[in-house]
Length: 105
Image (cartoon, rainbow, N blue to C red; front, side, top):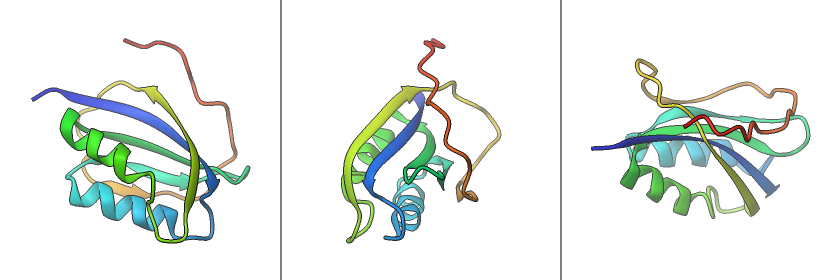
């Protein structure tokens, strides 16, 4: 099976509404690796890695990661597949930086 990885930025009402917890639960259910964190600009940042099918299902699920979240836009940038970083975790809030849109393929 082909594995893919992406960096994601979620915009909308995504903080204070259990978006990160819902994202962790969704990724764990799908057997994905990566992490999610709030950014200080009010967005949510994530990295996800797994099979194409599982990541595709994850991206669909991000439309509503929690009952109160309102995702209005998701930025998606390809990222290199990394070996040896299993599981999906919640990270502490970080300063916002532009998503790297450099083509790394």
